[in-house]
Image (tube, rainbow, N blue to C red):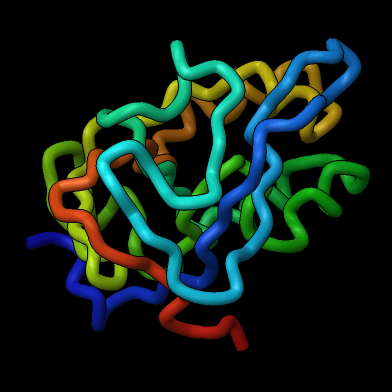
Length: 170
């Protein structure tokens, strides 16, 4: 099994409701906030988390979105200063799980990894949404994220359970 829990930390578990977002006036679930305790993880996703457009987000193959916090430092270096505030805490990319030490170097599509008591199977790389453009205030942010290959993306729930932060960033 990839992603031995002892070798990485879950820095944050993030969930949020779908809400009005951006100048286009549509709804989005991209804004997530850290959960204060363990969150149930089921085949449909994480308890308390919503997606506005289920055609492209959520569902059994995209139940959980993971992004490695390890990559935030490079984004902070490469983006203009106005964008850096979005990167101050985990959740900038709409992820449900933010980790340290679990990147694409350790896990690939098909791998099964443990998040708390849940088992997740990486089902696909993320296809960045245009809403990242609004979130970062950059017309091409989704395009920038697309070729970066630093996003494990979405996982299907292999076995339901609960997930919570397993460590604190120092």
